[in-house]
Amino acid sequence: MRLIERRLDDDPDVVTVWFNAWRYEQEEHPIIPLVGTIVQALETHRGFTQSFGAAGKRLVRSLRAIAYGFSAKSKVKIPGFAEVEASFVAKDMIERNEKLTPDPLLDRSLYFGAFNSLDGTKLKDSVRVVVLIDDLDRCFPDQAIRLLESIKLVLAQPGFIFVLGVARKVIEGYLQHRYSKEYGIADFKGELYLDKIVQLPFHIPPASGRMGEFCKLLLADQPAALAGELDPVLPVVARALGGNPRALIRFVNNILIDYAISQELDDFAERGGIPIRFFAVTRCLEHRWPEIFDTLTTNDQLAAAVPRWTPDSYPDHAEGTGPAATVAAQLLSDPELRLLLGGEHGREWLTDPVLRQASVSFLLTQQRLSPLDVSEVSVRYDAFVSYQADNRRDVIQIVDGLSRAGLRIFFDQHLQPGEDWERTLATALQSSNALLFCIGPNTFVSRGQTAEWEAMLGQRADAFIIPILLPGADTDAVPEFIRRRQWLDQRDGVTDEGVAELVRALQSRHRRA
Image 1: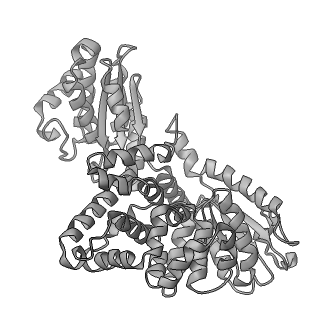
Image 2: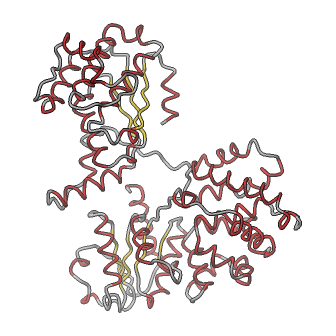
Image 3: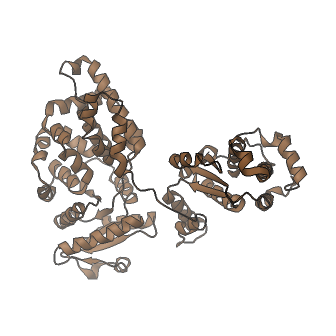
């Protein structure tokens, strides 16, 4: 959005307004600070008088009047001018224009009066006021909705354009929850509500195509030797961190500090120092795959064996039990982990136990992992696989096929002893675009899988769920609520055609998610 702002700033007929909505989420009427921010931007615009003329001055007067009217009942600080109650200028303006009058019924007709005060103000056809509202989803959802409705009712005027930076699912989820709980509307769809407010929704594509360029930019000021070490691994780290530029900047700063401190400590310096590439791999594993980090850093024999595995051997290793199966299952389903451990620096990290343990020892004894480091790593899965242990061989075949097609899959083979499995599964379900519900001979003996189905529907009424009939499945035992879904029949064995059908369905869902 800052790029949009910079591009528009060069146009003298455009006033850009940057508004951080979350800073004012405690306001009773969030439109007040928004109006104040618009007024401030208009008055400081270098070509305001020339481009906007007399209509621009009337616009400012009307906006100030609106701000005063909305705040007549309480003291509210507005950016750009003092507390509105104490603003005699604004009060005089209202009295002169007779647009709004502070009376006991004012709060019941604020939106109507505010609209009338602006309705007569017409800007030239060539001028625009572009308001960029960032981080709207950081507000409490009810306040975000209130601001959107205020904009729609009051500021939906010719010449005004509002650009919203928001994670739609946050707002849609709140609306769906509110209308189902408070009003009993079970099939309410939050996205349809937003579509009545937002005329042109669009999604910013992942920055993966430009992350390589961004990585080089981050390393531009570093010594050539240091940049050369990080250049091959940093793009892989960027993908592992979910393509989040903020998380990548923080990551690079962390490993630069790790490296600088380790160079000054006798315990590590006397070993010849720890190359920064080892810190990069160690921290990346710890941030994104803590269970794999724990497994590999406590089992040198397994770490040495992993580089000898091939992608074709992952399913065989994943069918077993124990640490090797855990690592193989994650490699099978996670393309980023394959890139990291299969790359030059990842293989070196696995096969050099001395430097690997030195980097791990340093981080464990000298540096503390911040919760923010992990919280900024946001990963979405194309599908969550729900299955019984006795169907694992067939499930692994499905996961292998989906992973080879470039899809990211979560299945609970990843869970470690002692892990809070309920919270982990709930988080994974929430981060998944679809649920693959694998049905075998013992699926309905316990409620474990059914609970995952219910959890998915509890999070999203329109959840995308594909039942998959595996060998031994008894269709007579399938509950009615599952029968209503179109299933994929693989009772004669998992086939390439069946996996290809799943790939098409999940790729189509990924586009719409």
